[in-house]
Length: 168
Image (cartoon, rainbow, N blue to C red):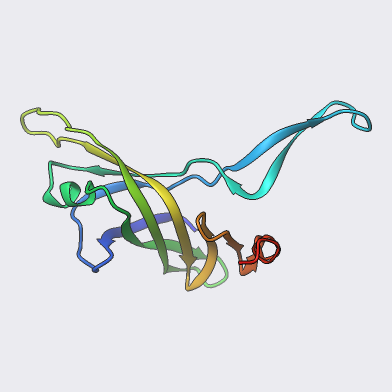
């Protein structure tokens, strides 16, 4: 895969939200250091399926009504739809692969931006992500739902046993 050729952001009602750039959430496992007898030092081990805070950042070009709407104190649902350019070295041809990211998040921050004549305002907005699902070329590569104990990577659900153990 070479580059994103285009993308758009939609709310849950499939309303196009405007001109933004986006920084997708990082998925970082919570971890703890294990040390003691039987180990030659320390190991920082991940807690499988448990993750630290995740944020989605949108950067609006100017002040937007959509940004104000997304700042309402409730869970917001967004879909980012992109097209990724891929070069097939066997055929020598380009193809464009769909990439979708579904996010549920709660608004954390909406900055005011800046006033500068002839320039974009750069209005950052940030969401605390509680759910994310990624699909690349029609294949689900990740689904993480913090409230429902779902952590699926390439179709394997790594929290299924924990849900069973919890009676879920």
